Length: 308
Image 1 (cartoon, helix red, strand yellow):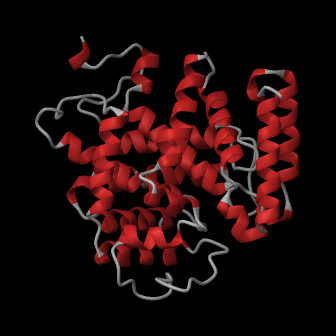
Image 2 (spheres, one colour):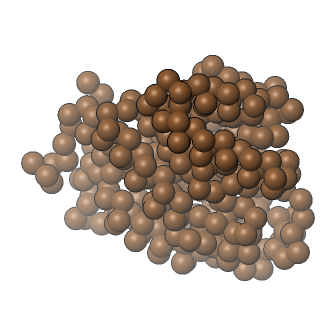
């Protein structure tokens, strides 16, 4: 039986979330059965290990430092951008969890309730600084994601003049990760997490539950990575494929699985321009929240001391 370390291990939980996300055969993403020309499953496994310590110690340093450190550790192990979006999402969540764990009332808890986590996250987002933004910009330049283009204000090629969260608000209309900062992680907490939890309650295994969560996000929000690299029309079309897969039963029916397979074929090739990477990143964030809330302990029969 796998037991969660006591007290809650934020870094290990983040690593597990990343491993679960990349193991699921999500159409258009890297998995054990699918690779990109420049990125493999092994790169994502290495990246998950790289962020364990930076995110596990997120409560000991400002948010921007954690983001930069996590990207530096990743780049020491991989040659491509595997997890910038994941780091940008998980770092504030990890800091929010660490602030809760630092409270003596929660110091020995093995779970963190999602509502409490989101409340702590709101504080984290409200207290970011210009220096946090400066380090985040350095992390983005180091990761060198494709298709960024130029912004009319607070461009990552320049030095920021406003706090990190404000820079994200300025980009929220064109970037799904930035939109999460601007909305208190609405897609993570209000769309992905409920879908993931319901899929698990319905008896789906982790892979199928993750695929269904990913499809729900993609059906709801056109993927902004696709928009940047291939245009809004293709992003809308990919979202329509996700909606079709859900209508056909997704992972729960033979028809749905066939539709997902066709979707995966359609998303392959062409230098992965149609990879819904932002959707995968938000899926990983929802996994992190679910695991912090005890999803793994529930599965393995473990319980929180406070609930015994």
